[in-house]
Image 1 (tube, one colour):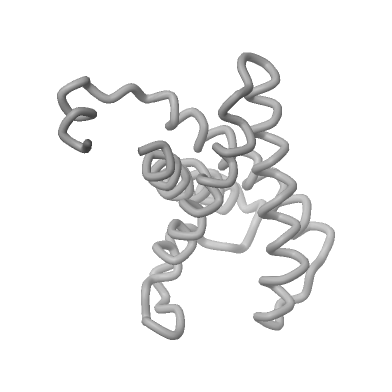
Image 2 (cartoon, helix red, strand yellow):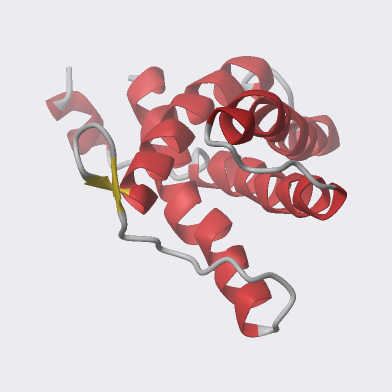
Length: 139
């Protein structure tokens, strides 16, 4: 159940926190990238934002496995640092080069900020408690 919940938290953190911050930065004229990109992605034609959210869900599982035993300040700092560093590193070293996109310092810095917010948002969503009857229904 924790894997499913952490996947859902990572998925929705992408849609709410990650894309929400991109929206704010775009509206402020700080980044040219628009949020909630619906352009189809190969090979299945899934909208880009849904593909991104799916991978956010997978990262959510990894994030929860690293932070679930922590509490207080340590929990939130690890959420921020994991979110900022690990997905950004993978994006800059693997994903962007595979797509033929140049890696620049501004992209790295924006990635660290946006993904750090995603990490905090994901673990914030993990704090939501479901009603007991809903939890029992999933067993």
